[in-house]
Length: 95
Image (cartoon, rainbow, N blue to C red; front, side):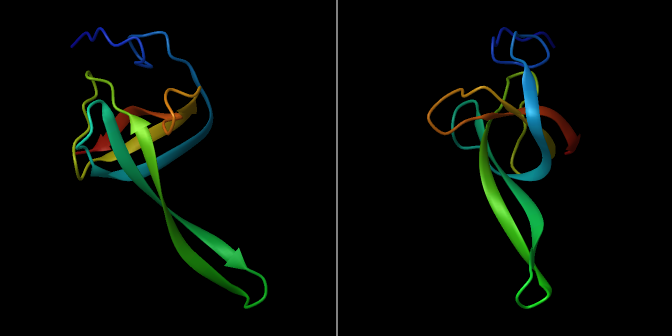
């Protein structure tokens, strides 16, 4: 499926660089935007333990990829697309 989105990393001219994450889509209510929840661990030296943390990252969702709630996706950092979006969905790992 060919898309006409200029902010698509596959069919458009958007380049991505920097950080790349794998996370779960927890919200797809906004138009062309998904909220991806990324789990990670942070080591606390004082207590010599690891904390499990999570981060919710807004990412651009191109119409050719069209990730939905519950999908496992890869996201990559790109130039700033709006006030809150600096990531783009590159592909769906698991539906």
